[in-house]
Image (cartoon, rainbow, N blue to C red):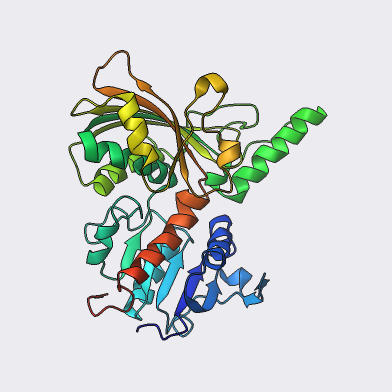
Length: 347
């Protein structure tokens, strides 16, 4: 299927969730050429009316026909079952779950980093993990200029990365602490998150001493940058911040690159804003990145222990650039490249 002059028919799957809600906002804000947007969610949400008069549809073989693009933010199980069905029905699927990211024949794409990977899609395109996403936007110009040998990354991840349950838990615990009430038992996390820091973002698979969030950073970074030899050490931490992931990134380069050269490369990079005057209190803050689409980079400096390494502080809104914005940008890239409804689409 290809669009007519009025635009594409677009499905948003998982439209009632945090990321799905932002996806709908961005499709409107960025004026994506859609002639119709149809929203899908779980059966319990079917029939619900969303802002703009969109009525939630249930996922069924008869309801998923006739779409050009389907943007998913509904979890791995739903994507595993329904993304291939949408693709078989003729849609190009952009999936925000982890289900397809490391599959060899599925491109894993960040719009500013490797958009050319879209050319090889076979009906399904994967959106990276939020922490990986913002980091590779900042790393791409450095990798192009000097090559990356090794990364040491510590994340400071907002509770919205766990969904509404994480936000509700943080706010409920914070209110209880401030009011002097007994702390409710933690449910979204292993321990209290309010006024605390948990060195545990994601889940531990049996026998693995890294969380799945840490494994995503390691594996997805290599795939997106196209270099399986990059060594990555990752520690993912959950912090009591509602929105905006922050990362301390140590980048060991293959060729010398000064902090000033890195600063200039980042200033010229698409999707990056450099805030780097620490003496004046200018550096990226999660609270200021929230609601924005750029990746913010600051504290750019030489690693005093390694002449080929730099330290960076990288911050971005995990619901926007970390998820929804990139998904919509990928739809825009597909449109610009003539890859929606392309004869090359083989589901």
